[in-house]
Length: 460
Image 1 (cartoon, rainbow, N blue to C red):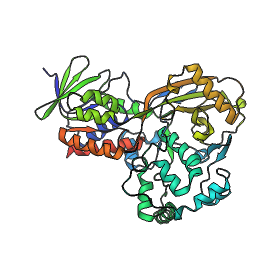
Image 2 (tube, rainbow, N blue to C red):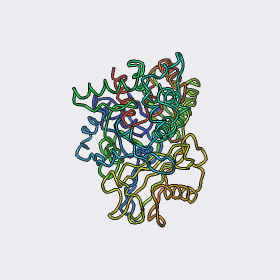
Image 3 (tube, rainbow, N blue to C red):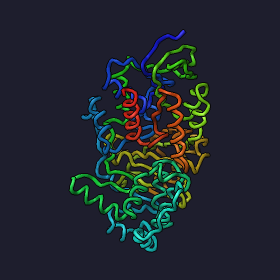
Image 4 (tube, rainbow, N blue to C red):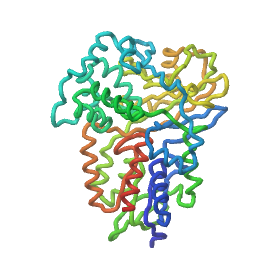
């Protein structure tokens, strides 16, 4: 016997599932729907701890304010007045080369005179308009694309650290088409990234918009006063009657044109539409009785482990001025950490007066071992690398570690083909939909856009 029947059941209470719930309720308040979350809390990797005057984000610490849909949703949640844009320090970014922090140049003239690459590397970048065309019929890696267009040194010291900072990935394993489709489109349309950027800058100037970069449209890092978890709390406050936590799903099966959802506690529900908003490795277990093909597709999307190590120090004990966003570390520098964000330098009230906060990332697809280190070993590794880079005296006043064993989906070479197979199988299964960061983009904006599309499909 099924306990209740719904028009829509959403499985997963992270930002993707909550956004899908919001868009469905906004467009059709008469729908009967329910969101079920396996954990005791909502948010997934989004969380904020407030400890001794420090505000610590568990995973992502913000989003780029370039997506109108995200800003519209925030306004509908009545959170616009709570938005906090990062201060101007966010424009000062650094990359480690030769053991020293080098400012990332934000314009061609600054790039030519910067020390971020040796002169040979800078000259090679300027030859980009004359680079060879992409070989036909291949899913090119990010590394191979960058090496072909602007050279090996730029690939090693500019793009690989950026890829590890965003995806926790390794550039020669990840698909350009799936991770940075705009780069590929720019090359196809203009034959050169430089030519494309010039044309886009001219167009943006006429339209009075930010032109962005080859990796994506422009935007400014934005969060909420007090941390990113505020948006999750607002979802819960607004939709608490439509949400049930501590309800892990064990399986889904199809019965005629509807679906039976069985929970681990033995209870069941019936639904016309199912939205899977869980990580893919969890979705695979849930759908195995529905479709082994669908489960295999979910399991073919790998994830990289990542640990976020938050450290608080007295400001007087740090030699560097910390006048920026933070820094990234190229693989060739042979350090453990991927990079560090100087959170208290870009957002207010993330550390008490006279204190600073570092959010340092360690792990990624190139380092699956760090996730298994003890807290003390992780702390020692991070402190050692930070000390070598920014100069630290003494022990931290606070430290907190957030471990994500399967933290960041990896859009590896062949990801587009996996998405094609997934789309075809979902059509076969009827009214099963997916949303999350494992499919078409890993950012908060990407998740919200995907959830909006899913809501539109259901309402149609």
